[in-house]
Length: 300
DNA sequence: CCTTTCTCAGTTCGGGGTCC
DNA sequence: GGACCCCGAACTGAGAAAGG
Image (tube, rainbow, N blue to C red; front, side, top):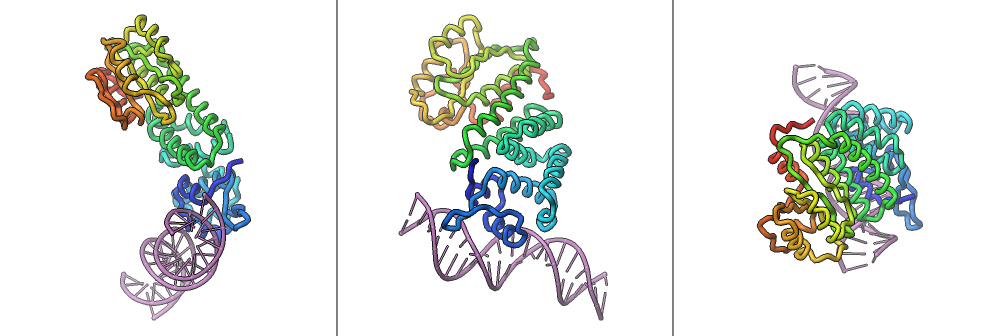
């Protein structure tokens, strides 16, 4: 079971640490365990409970009122709120709680409800990415296990696969050909998968090679597919790769294609980008680009 | 109806301890 | 040694209740 410092709780829940202490003192609302030197630490259940309290509090419930509610009642109210409004923070906190308790049903239903309410794209942009951002905060401070991240990203990927499936073969007359891949050792495929979905939803043809693609296999795929665009993402800082060489290789390997690069490692890299290369700084920019090449596209 | 008082919730301050 | 944590007390602001 993971443990969290009061600072971790503050970072994830948005509740200031002194406020947490005063809640504890005045309302006995949470009673974290203490180290031998009297420092508070919180477990998964505590964090989930605090996230729920924070949601109710933001929806106007008084803290004194919440302190008198049973955990079951709080759970019921949260489920109601997640289902009946589209304030994204509620969904983000809900996903966090579901992840920490490995509650697959809750995780699925929050995502599904959101997709029904605001569509797949907005769910990814406004709920999933902010959620992953918060996971990243906990990840950096070492407060969650890899299993939590795998659990969450597994379900999110599953949702994306289903959504992608629904668009297979639906090509528009203005379709462009895309080749999507991740360089060797780059593991974070969610962004690429989302790009796959965005493009297919707009009627483009996508050859999705996924992660761990060696350059020679990549070259084999090019001849058959003849892409108009090649898109890749590089985010992981630990990858020992010559980025300039990778960029040069990509620019020369299929000269008919434009190269689209995204991910922090390209965005902040000190590289000479050939003319055919375009760096996409944010996912919003990719969506804008995808819209600009997609005639008559309207979301959802 | 307006002012005063009370209640609630969050913030600030100061002093001391713990951790890295 | 500096960042972080703990605690209690006092302060602040908003809103509700009381009362003249």
